[in-house]
Length: 173
Image (cartoon, rainbow, N blue to C red; front, side):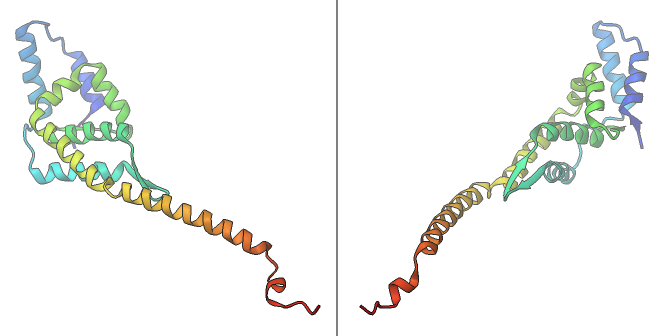
């Protein structure tokens, strides 16, 4: 297990990188070395990340699948960073996300494996589209069935008010 995000950010803040071109290069080299960054991970691992995010952040409510895109975004960031670096996110990935973003490290870390990250985003969109593709059909069928049930309820109410004895038993006048 690698460093936690909190430990890493604290370590980063203790470094005093000079804000010059040499300092920027020095910081980038320190990031690569400190985080053991892998610029590429296998396609299967990228696919697993995308499918895990869809599964983890998609729920079914009344027969309709809903995806929590905001939480999924943080999930994507944390999964991609965990897969490409030695960093590990804690129990509160949003707090870890905020630590990286506030320190300015988040875009720099992602930039180290940007192509791989972009590919994961594409796979995530594909996996989510597959997961949600039957929503339109389910919604249409649901609305149709609701309409049928309402009409049957109305018909049932009318039939309940009819006295069948008056219809089928002839009067003896």
